[in-house]
Image (cartoon, rainbow, N blue to C red; front, side, top):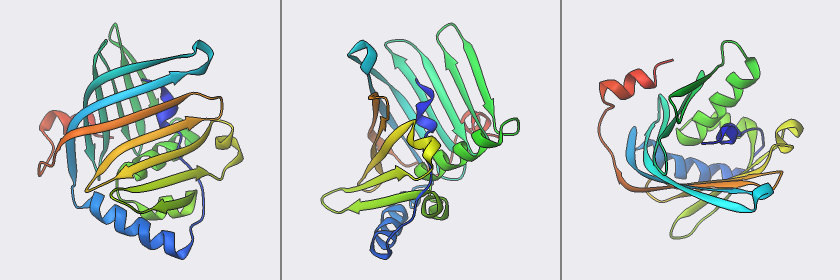
Length: 198
């Protein structure tokens, strides 16, 4: 899994879109915990190829997200407001801790806000548009010039919860995350709580 998932930042909102965004996130926040199957499709421009991976996910509105890839090879990513932990094939673990890096701490908090219900962070940090339909489409475009060099936009498709997230990088790469067969348990397991602990 690539680290560009944690690219999510800065922009203002029109009044209408702010109301629509609040409606969308009211639906998302109605489910404190969401679990299900994950399909990740990445396109790497320099190699002119895409890679499809499958696994499971956990989204906890007040904690963060867990992506566990099982196919074609195992890996995982855990993102909270404070840190990101990646486990790669061969049990190689990479930890980015916000306590050691103020910029990353800000980015981690913003990633968390996209999957949770921290609307103030989104309103402070994104130029947002919301398109209604059978499913709402929320488009986030970075305001910060530095982040604009890294990615162009993030798009969320939302029904009764987040159905997909698409990230387009400035360099032409992109990644799509599709969330299927979702369940909405009342709480995390003890293992999940420990993995999402800051």
